[in-house]
Image 1: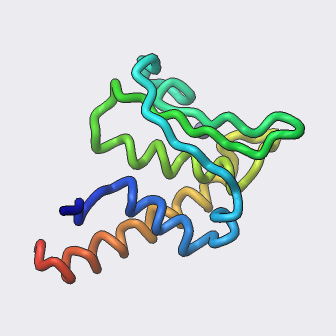
Image 2: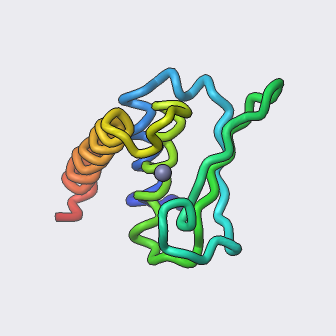
Length: 118
Ligand SMILES: [Zn+2]
């Protein structure tokens, strides 16, 4: 038994195909029932490792529609790829996010063909 269209797996697959080095980082992803808002940072966020630590922690709100949750995951992964900079959602971040989004669409289409979903 397995999910054949788990959108979180698709985001992870797409991101690792584009940025294989990301697999060397320790990244944990959790659903967080305490996140309640709909603004930037309230649907999800990433905790970068403190000095001497290696673990990234992505938190995703469960209080948003399910269909937005994979997008939040892609959003936070793009932050990890770009790194901490002065511009949180600047041009570089936007480019990475768009690239992940496009790759996800490709995977969804090819999976749909593979499993005859369309
Ligand atoms: Zn952000």
